Every structure is written in C-alpha cells, then in structure tokens.
Length: 308
Image: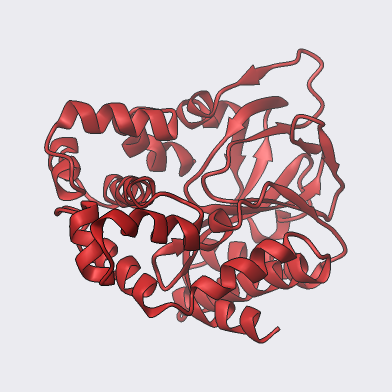
C-alpha cells in the first residue's frame, strides 16, 4: 500500500469542466472520446456502455479514462441512432441541454451529471492511461456521487471560493476512484508494477524534460543525454519502464498540449503545431486527426459546442 500512496501523492489533478445535462433524444455514440477522464453520474434514465452494452443503473457512475474511445448509449433508442464523437461535438445541442437550475439536479428526467479532469503523475504521465484502464462501472459509492454533485453545483454558482472548492472536490474524486480500483482488485497487478517506475529519478528527469521541451528536439540522442544512458538503449529503457515507446509518448504529450492550446488560446493552428514541435502544419493536422478522430479546427470549436 505504501507504493500506492506514493503514486497518489505524485498525482497532479486538474479540473476541466462539469455539467448537469438533460437528454433531448436517445442515441448511441460509438466512439465517445475525450482527452480528460470523465466520471458520469446517472440521475434518471438509461445509460449503457461498451460493445456488450453494460447497464448503468440510476445512482451509479460510469468512469471513462482519457484517451479511451468507448461506445456509450443514452436513453432507450428505438430507432438505433448511432453517431460518431465528431457528430456529437458538432450537434450536441440536438441531444442535450445544460441544466443550471440547482433544484433540478438529480430531478429532471433522462439526466446525468459529469466531471471531467486530468490526473497526471508528476504532471507528465496520464495516470489512468498508463494503467490501460477500460471504461468501468462504479456502484455503491454515495460519497463519490455526492462529490460529483458538489462539483457541478459549484460550477453553476459564481460564489467566493468557487475555484478552490472545485479543485478540492476534484482531487477527492480522483482519490476515491483510485480507492475503488484497489478495493475491487481491478488492475492491481498493473498498478503495482507501474508504481515502481515512478521511483526511478532518470525516468522522472525524462518526463520533466519532455514536458518542458515539447517544441524542441526530442530525439533518442537528446533523451539519452538526459537519462545518461546510451542512444541505442534509451528507447528500450523507456519502454521497459513505461510500456510505451518514447517517441509515441512524446507525440501523445505534444498532441495533448495542442488540444490545450486550441481550447484556451486564439493562436493559429500553424503556430500551435510549431509550438508543440511540428514544423510541417499539414503533417501536424494529419497526425492530429489520426489521433483524435476530428480535425484540429473542430477541436477548437469543441468548447463552444460543449457549453450549451
């Protein structure tokens, strides 16, 4: 358990958004995807996920790890309406409306609340992605459900201390999800294995260097100098400890940074591509669409489409 405590203590948690949504019409999104982790609390209605259409009962929660495309169905759809994640982002107001009435949270028919957040080890490694955790059901956790509602309520109100409470509640959510994983013996072997590589200072140096130099040269030659290992060995060393090739990890970090810049700045796609290490804008756009399934321009419009 000591190793798990070290992992939890190393987590940097960042709140992204929270909403209470009411369903307009039932549908299925075959590849629901987000960079952030999403915890969905079903208040009323029907929610299923996965190819086997596992049912989330009212009062239960669905956890979808960041970067993990998942089939999700909202409501009972007699017409078998299946859309893509791109369709949902573009036309979300056709399927949901956002409820900002505190009295209706948990009361409106066909409604759910969700909290989206990041959880990164040393602010570098996406924790749940590193465990290769699939979407899973969380039941019998009223404390966790209450935390989701608290975050949504605070996000709706413009009160003093709002951001601080949201951050505190979101950190509590992350800890409770990790505890649920451990308590139910889910992925424990992987979690225990991965917890050991956080102790290697050379790997931590690599994480930090990559994070601080996303727009620069991150070849294996450069990484070998940071980790003080040979250029021929650095790729094997990195993969042995993280189960991912360094260049794949670097591209993921660059794309994640690009998403952040698209959402929070008005910089051009060309400038964002250069800032995260892509001199060729066309290549950046191709890689971006390949990774996220939508063009960079549509990702930029995502926030306005989500703020319904």
